[in-house]
Amino acid sequence: MEDINNAVQSLMQGADTLFILLGAIMVLAMHAGFAFLEVGTVRHKNQVNALVKIMTDFGVSTLAYFFVGYKVAYGIDFMVGAQELGGKNGYDLVKFFFLLTFAAAIPAIISGGVAERAKFYPMLIAASLCVALVYPLFEGMIWNGNYGFQEFLSQSFGAEFHDFAGSVVVHAVGGWIAFAAIYLLGTRNGRYRNGRLVAFAPSNIPFLALGAWILTVGWFGFNVMSAQTLESVSGLVAVNSLMAMVGGIVSSMLVGRKDPGFIHNGPLAGLVAVCAGSDLMHPVGALITGAIAGALFVYLFEMLQKKMPKLDDVLGVWPLHGICGLWGGIAAGIFGLTSFGGVGGVTFMSQLVGSVTGVAIALIGGFIVYGVVRAVAGLRLSAEEEFEGADLAIHKIGANGAD
Image (tube, rainbow, N blue to C red; front, side, top):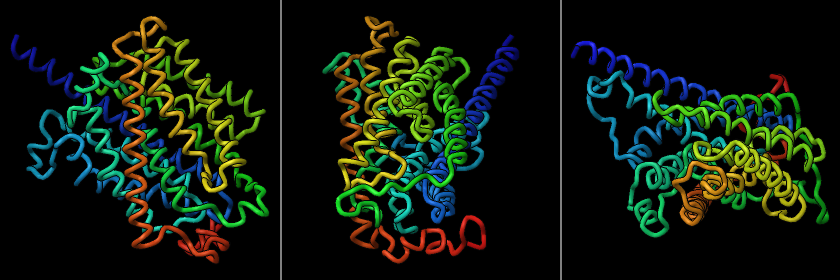
């Protein structure tokens, strides 16, 4: 009987390792979505740069998170023997891979906001610092109980801050770091003339749509597999993710007047917002959460264009991730309540305080990191390089090779 129990336990450990590995691969694939969403949105002369940034950002993020960030968040050091690391089917290593793909989303989010005028290496350095220090600081506070923050919320407001799949930990943090970077970087040349907006149309709507679809599909690995074990998988998370996605599509279609850019970002807004409470909400609550997020994205993106000339956010990452992520953290404290059909175990005040704390850490950390890098190395291409385009100025080749 003992042999049978050991065999069953070994099988479950192997199944859990495979499960979280598949989740890591799905979220890794989402980075192709980030790449093509940016490629389709920027002007043709900056498409190569968009692709290269997402790839290299992932590379430096892995190094930063492996050697520093993961230890900051979870206190785990990989500088031990390989035999020890590979124990229990290597589940702990695969868990690192899964959480790395979340951490690497931070530079991918920032990339879309600072597109078309940023230097290459200074932005890579800043991204690695964010993944090594700023992101894991809040990640550890929420997902590992560091610094007693969760205990404080529980004692003060009756529940810990709940963020199942990262509305605030990943998306709001990434969006608000991006806000700081965008503000310090400044507006693209030619964007405003005589006080009036000059629209830069997306270069390739099919690529934009492809990026949105890759992200949308991968998001079900992002959310559902945040359970991290087969035993904890929840169909509620899957259906809530679906309903929030649909809510974002429909509201962005209506509010955005059938604009393809808004419609393809609408599902992403809904999915960002539902991450936090996807395991708690009723599907109708998730639908409402996603619909509000889709409308928020459209309204705030248009406000950025017309009323905030100093904040030139190319892909709208601050409204999409920063604001919709903040809304998602708060929404979990509304639609997660049993009085609104949710599972319960959350309080509105804990969600509000936790969400605002994440924004504050991201904003302060973002201004420190990008401010220091700007002072030391500069963040922005010269006017001539920006006019020529980042593809030729930085990479010496255009999207069609001979450009």
